[in-house]
Amino acid sequence: MGGVEHEDPPSKRVKVSSEESESFSNSSSLREPARCSLSDSMARPLESRGDDEVVGVKGVVKKVELVRIIAEALYSLGYEKTGAHLEEESGIPLHSAVVNLFMQQIIDGKWDESVATIHKIGLMDENIVKLASFVILEQKFFELLDGEKVMDALKTLRTEIAPLGVHTNRLHELSSLIVSPSQTAIDGTSDQRLRIRSRKKLLEELKTLLPSTVMIPEKRLVRLVEQALDLQRDACRFHNSLVEEMSLLTDHQCGRDHIPSQTLQILEEHSNEVWFLQFSHNGEYLASSSSDCLVIIWEVKVDGRISLKHRLSGHQKPVSYISWSPDDHQLLTCGVEEAVRRWDTASGECLHIYEKSGLGLINCAWAPDGRRIFCGVTDKSICMWDLEGKEVECWKGQKSIRISDLGISSDGKQLITVCKETMISLFGWESNSEKFIEEDHTIISFALSKDNRFLLVSLSNQELHLWSIDGSVILVAKYRGHKRSRLVVRSCFGGLEQAFIASGSEDSQVYIWHRVSGELILTLPGHSGAVNCVSWNPANPHMLASASDDRTIRIWGINQVNMTQNGRHSNGVCYCNGAT
Image 1 (tube, helix red, strand yellow):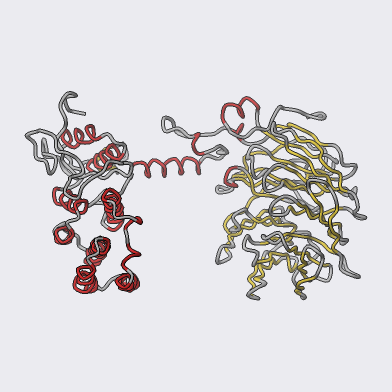
Image 2 (cartoon, one colour; image 1 turned 90 degrees about the vertical axis):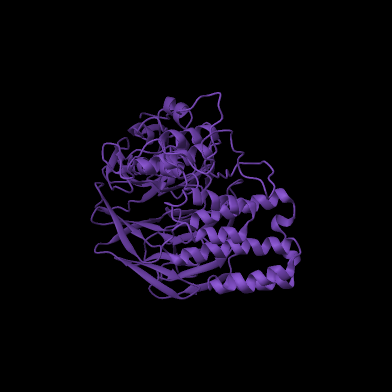
C-alpha cells in the first residue's frame, strides 16, 4: 500500500504477534529495522491531517482510529510490510514513538527504564500508572528469582513494588515466594525463549490496562467485526445456522427456510391423544406419552429419520410427564396421579416403580448427578428419592399443585414448581430459601431454559411470559397469538442457542416466535387436533416435534437441499408416514 514491492518498508513500531514462534534474546528488537532513510521509531507524516477527519456516510468513524486498527490487524495477521506501508502512506502511526520505546523496553527486560517511560506517555489516571508499574515490576521480581538473585528480588519487592500501594493480596503472595523461590521458575523453566514469551504476555496484559488511545487492544478490528456479526445475527428473525456460516461479504439475513416448518414424518403408533413428548439431551431419542397409558421411545437415526425403539407399558393411567436422566440412559415417566416408573433406555426394561402410600404422584425430575429423583405429590408436597426408592427428604406444605411441571436447576439446588394457581416457587432446598414469580392469570405450564437463566410460563389468558430468574426475578418478554381455552398446552425453547420459542395451540397449529424480539414468525398447520406439546431437538436446531390430540406426532424439519448446502445438521430424507 503506497510502497514499492521490491523495497523493504521502514520499521516504525514495536509489534508483538501472539503467533510468533521465533526465539529472541533480551537485547534483540522485535523486528529488524529495514534499510531506509525514514526514522526507525515512527512513521513520518506525509501531510498534516486532522484527527477529527471522519469517514463513512454517518460521520461517526474517525479516520485516524480506523487506520490505526487496520494497521494493528495487518501486523497481527503477519503482514509486516503492508502494515508499515500503511503507516507510511497515511502518515498515521499505529503507536507514538514513546509507546514504541516503552514496548521495546518491555521485550528487552529494561524494567526500570520502562517504568520511567510509562510516566512520559501522558496518562491522566495515576492509578493506571501504578497498576501498570506493578505488573512490570512483578515481572522484574519473577525474573530475578528465576535467576536466583533472591536479595535483588527482595529489594525490588520492598523498595519498588510495595510503595505503589496496589494489589495487596498479590504483594503478600510475592512475599511468600521469597521463602520458596524454586516455585517461581517462569513457565517451569529458565529457557531464554520461554522467558521472552512471558514478556509478550506481560505486554498483552499492559494493553488491557492502558487506554486504547495509547495502545490499540489486540485484534481490535477482528473483535469489531465479530460484534457486527453478532448484531446482524441477533437482528435476523430466522437465524438458525452456525456462526461460522456467516459471511463478511454480504449483510446477514436468513430466510424462513432455516426454521423447521416442513412435515418430514408423521408418527402414528399411539392409539389415543398424545399429551407429552421430549427429546433426550443428546438429541438421539424422543420419548412420547399418551392417554393410551403407553410411553414410546423413538430413535433419531443418523439420517434424521425417526424409528420406534421401545413401547413402554405398565402405567394404569394416562401418562402425563416424562424426564430424561442427565446421561439419557434412563427415563422417568409419570401417570396421572399415579406412580413414577424408571426405565432403561437401551433395553426398555422397567427398573423401579416409585409410589407413595395413599397418594398419587404428579410430576418427576432428575437431580443433575443422576442419583436422585424429585416428584410432586397430590398432597402438595415434593419428595426426593434415591434410585432404589428410599425417600431421602420430603418438603411439605404448599410446594406444588396438580400441574405436571417440575424444574431443577443445573446445580440441583433449586426446585421450580407451581405452588399456587398464579404463583411459581423457586425453592432453594439446601438453603431453605424461596423466591416467587407472581402472575395475574392461572399458570398452565412452564419450561426452563437450558442455561437455567429463564423460565417460560404459559398462562390461561393465551400469553407466554418469559421471566429472567438469574438473580432477581424480572419479566422480560411476552408472546401472543396461540390459542388456549381448556387444555394443558406446553411450550419450549429451541433452535440455535435457544433463539426461538415454540408452543402448541388448541387451533391445531404450532406457533414459533423469535425469542428476543417477541415477533411471531411462523405458524405450522398440519395437525387435525389440538397440539398439546412441542419439543425442539437440543442437538439439531432444524428438528422440531409436536404432539396432538389427533393421536399423531409430527416431525418438522427444513428442506433437504437447504440442509445439505447450509447446515451441519441433517433431518434426513423428507419422509412421511401419511398425508402432510
